[in-house]
Image 1: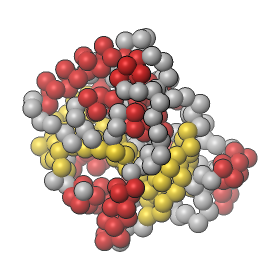
Image 2 (image 1 turned 90 degrees about the vertical axis):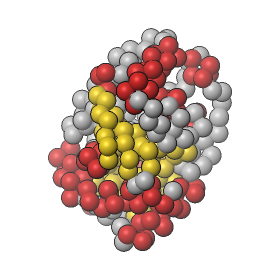
Image 3 (image 1 turned 120 degrees about the vertical axis):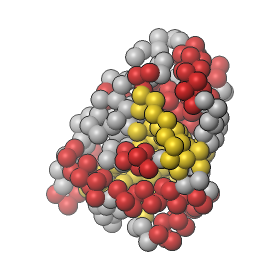
Amino acid sequence: MALDGRLIETLDAAQAVMEGRLGGFAPEVGLILGSGLGPLADRIEGPVFIPFGEVPGMGTSTASGHVGRFVAGMLGGKRVLAMQGRLHGYEGYSAQEVAFPVWLMARLGIGTLITTNAAGAINESYRVGEFCIMADQLNFTGRNPVTGTEPDAMAPRFFSMMDAYDPALRALAHRVADALSVPVQEGVYLGLLGPSFETPAEIRMFRTWGADTVAMSVCEEVIAARHSGMRVLGISLVSNMACGVEGASPSDEEVHEVGLARQEDFCRLIAGILEAE
């Protein structure tokens, strides 16, 4: 997939296809389900499945465990549109291609985005299996989807990233987690391009910057969401300690194993947030 200066034209075509497939269903919350977290989409009621490949402008998800489809329906009493899998820069996609489905969600009238992922813990007080609510982000991908002229035609190119992760949604997530006895942290997320995991030296550097977790997604999605005026909640599953922390050497297999083990609490947490929102 290459947008090649046709971002707005391709979004128009994608919106038309999605609206046709949704048949009048108007989603209000967008969900992006990261590594090991895709099974939440299987709990959506009255699902409509739309493979990424059937939507103009959407790339194919090649990451392990990412199904690569939209799932629309009801979850936690809300009309949701979930991405069962996401697109990553390390798969070869540009920043705008990664952000494309978020802009598409905004076109469909979605005002709230919940983006999730698996992340490594830089903060040594975190434990594998906990969830971390994103308080802020450090975009170290070296990319920004709003560069160029077409995003400026969609919404002003200069916009504030203050409270990029909505304070009210973060507070709500804490209340729900407490009520469900699901352990959560809150911290600063750092996003990298990947696909190689970080070196111990990089992790030590990121810690001095104030980063608590690290992974290879989310930042470009959140920039696009804020560009579109969407409220954002970000939640990471701490799937591993970052490289060098307590002697850790992360692997893709570990990430998916922890996701499977924490699947039930993740589903309870997201459904609870939707019900309370």
